[in-house]
Length: 285
Length: 325
Image (cartoon, rainbow over all chains, first blue to last red; front, top):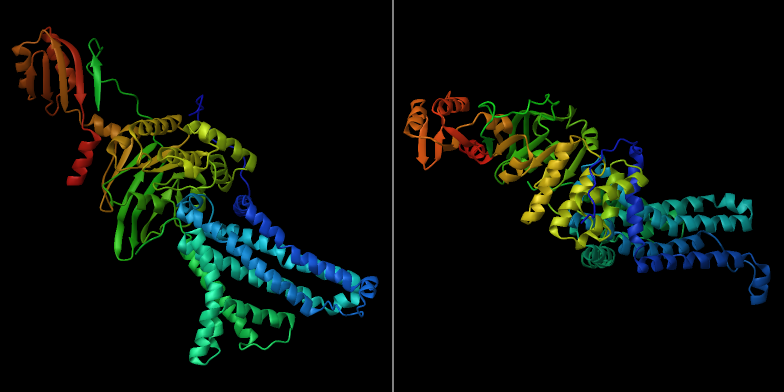
């Protein structure tokens, strides 16, 4: 109990801009996230592969190193396949990071009935979802397209402007492929956590959607002798889109355009599920 | 509720506080209806609530919480309209929410946060700058009596402490209207007393107007000056409690010195029902009979009135009448 009693004072000062209030959620959620040592460790581990890639770019342009190792010049080619490999590995880390961080963003609010406290203020559902998803978006950006662009700039500075000009589309592919993966992962993680309201179960469900989805897709393909089962495999769809974006030769059962559409449909469904659950009070009709 | 008049009062009238200047309408409803599926929860509510502290009463399922949630824009109205501080609930909900502090009925907190961070975050979401939100979070927690527990995670709080934390987050940004949904739910008697005292303190501070939703008559009676009674989604009764009490001065209890049968007879001649035990008299005042008449009769017969208690209609009586209607 208070040692002394204070009286209530009204507030008459200025207010912050309305648009800035979803960053409040971002700040608090991110602070909560990094209270976990495991999260911090995982985030640091996510930068190992970009560092290795950075070293490879440097070594690919280091004639003395190649000479010392007895390797011919051009053995380490920094091209679209290199960046595709970079994205493939970082995509896995992005998934792991989402599986750990994503479900904890919304489920505690739902489990503890905190949503009415947010929405009784001048703060909308859209701002809430934006604020929460920005945590994942910025976190995953830091390990996907941001280091990807750093690698691209590093390669461009070492290989010269002509390489940069000829391969500018790779930078675009890096950003676009990352943003699509971030959108899918963020929405999926938040939609699942909003529906199960239990962080651990939501994390397990996210893993299940990815791994059991792949198994289910294979089962459908096997039983029905079709390729349509791949539409249940989010990772496969993403791989198809990435192959298209990075122009990597690979055979895929689904056309790239259809994979794009399927992923956008997944995003829309997740958004719909999310908006259905993110309400001050659920109305049971 | 009773009022005691000491012997020697200059007149027979109860001393009344002068009526306060009328307040601007807080909530105006015009045929407000809310429907979930085929079930109508609120049916055509029409009222203009003006009190400083308004109680929403009704049995469970009467639509009290639904009304509050509709005024906060959580539920859409199926017909009619509602305005809070003159702003339309359907189109200007953001402005309304900027003026409102809300304490929900159920558990509402973020378990891993401590109370200071929680209240600060809620203040920032209401538009306070971070440094001001932090300062006011401390002040609000001191005010509600959670000063020493303010750095503890909310998940470790007792029910009473969670209620206080909810109250702190509702007042941190200095709202003009405080909506309290069952604020004393699950509290032990001392915690309930503390909560009621705080609500009274806020009400008497006159910085905020209060809408208190409860099914506990005592809470409403203790803290509200107006009451809206809902029954099955309809308004069963709406009244100013003070006026209601003034209009129901029916029961009178006297403690006298020197009274005899003559005095009792005189009172009965006025049409009042009277029961006498030793030097105490209980009576039901007839229509048109005022307390000054009793004083006059006593003065004529040299009877000294040592104590006079008015037993007015309690909120329970009003509520029961509304439920029977």
